[in-house]
Image (cartoon, rainbow, N blue to C red; front, side):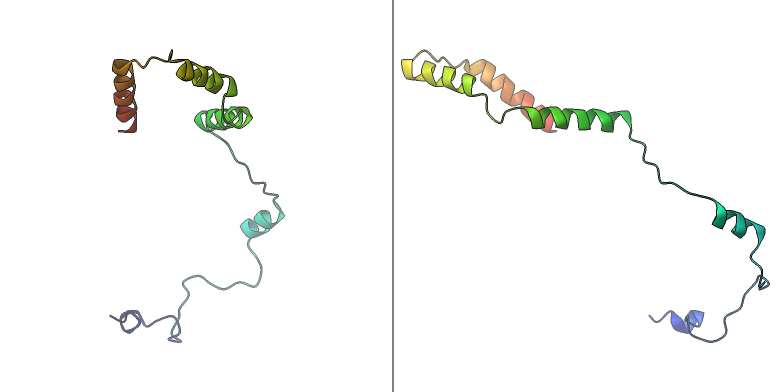
Length: 99
């Protein structure tokens, strides 16, 4: 559907203006052009908290080497016991958090 047939299009040459054309800028335009505007950004409290948490995570080591070595040693010695009920509960909690 061609809407230019209904509205006359932008280049129909029959454009009208409802306001009188003045060569002098009005006082509102003068005030606006002389005013100084500054951009401001305000962050919510939750955004600030997220940024703080991200900064803390960035400062953390990728892997806790001491914990890895402790668990590795326990596995090698046969001392590492898995609590399957606790593991299953954690998996269910994680699943609930995703939903």
